[in-house]
Length: 430
Ligand SMILES: Cc1cc2nc3c(=O)[nH]c(=O)nc-3n(C[C@H](O)[C@H](O)[C@H](O)COP(=O)(O)OP(=O)(O)OC[C@H]3O[C@@H](n4cnc5c(N)ncnc54)[C@H](O)[C@@H]3O)c2cc1C
Image (cartoon, rainbow, N blue to C red; front, side, top):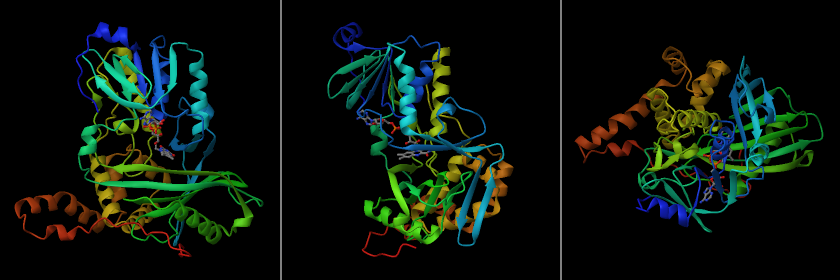
């Protein structure tokens, strides 16, 4: 919880260990910011990085698309110049033009940042669990399970702002997934093409698909992803993965070895995240709304946030990590979230039509919010328009109807959130 504590600054400095900056949460956002700080004119500042984890395992892989090289280009593990989309009616996609789909492994990213910061004695990393961040007159105190630290400016990527926890988000879903890095005996995969989405699987009331990213002819990352309000039991994903590999890739369990497991969940919500956690605490990363609500991609936005903050710090401007994007993208996100949350099965129709009738590079620009209105009109013309108009009705008209006629049965139009299918023994998944 963030609340105001009127400490005497000199006393705070005397009692607590003080730094110029504290980075609370050393994940993608915290480390990206620290990496930039060490290359900026502020590189001599004293910086404390706090995280409950050691950040030395491959806890996730980040994929994103870009035409240009970013600061972490040298640790990109694999790139694909082409992407494919599959459904029962066929496969679409192909070359990304000037774009490339890139993958960075968590362990490489953590190692790279750590390696760079090693040269700076003024950057300190402590593995401690943060319990709270409290405002003072001149900065903020970060309390951990071991100590308390002070800095005039704190960057938070680990504590959820209390105001957001209390607010009921208009839409909230999880993009939850589990996957395997598999190795096959026979060459199976085209190394220059990733399978971004494979919808050849039953939907059971919520949009779900597989993706396959080949690392070599005999190795690939295969993931099962679902958009729904609740996560599933671990065994469900494993069973789905095995069934998919057998049915769509003719890979029986004895034909591959599982070299690595990955699992995770990314929030998909139109809940607006506040720019600050407290008066002197700036939110960054997921806590500052870096995650695109309808795709779960955040890595590139996190890099843009870090660049923006360093610029503001160097120029002495007020600090704000939030990125500006045209409001109409929030409108599109809200409609799709509404469809996915209340009529999950229709998500498949939306994605299939999107990829069937549009170029892959145009879709990626749209998902990255880099298209113009006319391009967006062209894309929407290929989508099931009635599905979207119904969502407009549910999101924007129904609240008005309910307000004007509270006794009306308007809420009957909105079915309850569907629970995902529980795992049953021998359940047929494909
Ligand atoms: C498994 C997974 C795969 C993803 N893949 C992609 C992808 O391919 N492409 C993409 O663009 N996005 C992806 N994302 C989304 C997004 O890029 C990541 O979630 C990204 O790591 C978010 O960065 P962050 O700094 O906001 O959060 P994190 O990276 O999660 O960092 C937050 C840090 O805070 C620490 N922390 C939390 N609570 C405390 C506490 N009380 N005390 C101390 N430390 C604490 C955590 O240990 C963590 O290190 C993925 C997310 C997940 C979960």
